[in-house]
Length: 76
Image (tube, rainbow, N blue to C red):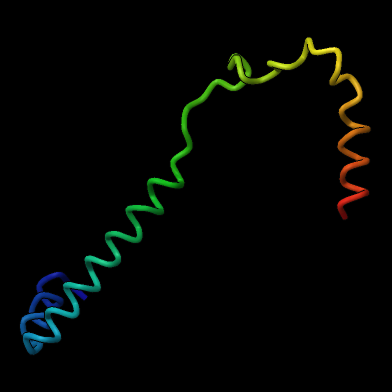
């Protein structure tokens, strides 16, 4: 369907139906604007981020894998 034919179809609708079409278009714009924003991944350099490895020098976390495993076994 061409844009002109679509416009003609829209104009031929009653006023209430035109309002519903406009409301639906506004709904779709809002819905897909959020989806597009959410799918854009930030450009972060995780390897050089100070957050990664910030606890690597802590001696009390050397056996954290055992601690996590025990917690999971007890909770699940």
